[in-house]
Image 1: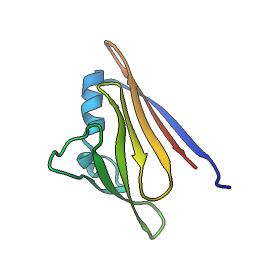
Image 2: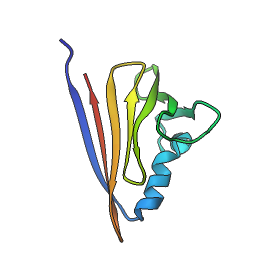
Image 3: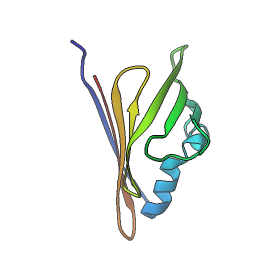
Length: 114
């Protein structure tokens, strides 16, 4: 029996929801934002995140291993929800949801595997 893993992080960002949405979808810029992300590439001729898109990642943490995996966009509701299904390593879901009107935007990132 596999163990269930659940990770939730909530952020409040001082930016309009549209701007936060643009940053979340700019996965190819992730390496410049997070040192552990070595590569994030959208597959296919349309280099944008949309329903059905596949994104390949390479991550490097403290361990001497480069973690490579792919995700597929399984839910896409601009500008509030994008869900990535992990396709290669462990089974799981990575969901990013945004809430906000005028003023700060609340972001919740939920990761589930198992």
